[in-house]
Image (cartoon, rainbow, N blue to C red; front, side, top):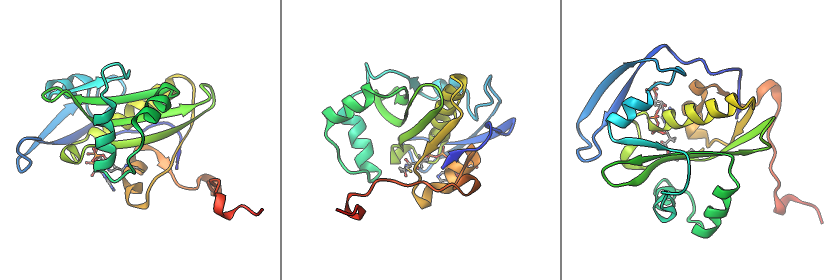
Length: 188
Ligand SMILES: CC(C)(COP(=O)(O)OP(=O)(O)OC[C@H]1O[C@@H](n2cnc3c(N)ncnc32)[C@H](O)[C@@H]1OP(=O)(O)O)[C@@H](O)C(=O)NCCC(=O)NCCS
């Protein structure tokens, strides 16, 4: 999917926070739009124990790998993940203050000027549905736009299209279709 135009988010929104310790208790919060029209401000996230991190210094990659596996991604070599992250331009993860563990993550690679691709968008299943995925994507996209990068793409599983569309992404923009190299389809 490709980011279409600029982000247009509602001026006010509501966010449901599910207490990780007691998953049954839904709490509803509303908040004013922040500086970048984020659905939830950095301060609101922090007040709920979710700390935004943009470097991998404090990121335990085994814990991150566990989140990948928990959402169904194939388990990857942690050292290879480290190399991938070292070659990543924009990265954002959310640390849950209580456990110090990553609970949400996304990263973008690209040429630093024109194009970027967003990868590895995940939220720990225990923390899904409370706005963390949206918070992470909004910020990664904003950081890319601030750098002047407007061609922002990502791969989406069909079941997640509805998550990305309100965030400004469209499928097959102007009929353009994505293609990926497939060794088994290559002739000779
Ligand atoms: C997809 C994922 C990142 C969403 O993160 P999340 O924190 O659960 O989502 P949020 O709570 O931020 O949801 C934001 C909005 O998207 C909606 N949404 C979330 N997942 C959705 C889905 N699969 N389809 C349609 N809408 C979805 C929410 O209802 C919410 O809507 P609202 O703003 O109107 O209230 C997360 O569910 C996840 O990690 N899934 C497994 C891994 C995965 O599929 N990653 C994407 C790879 S392509």
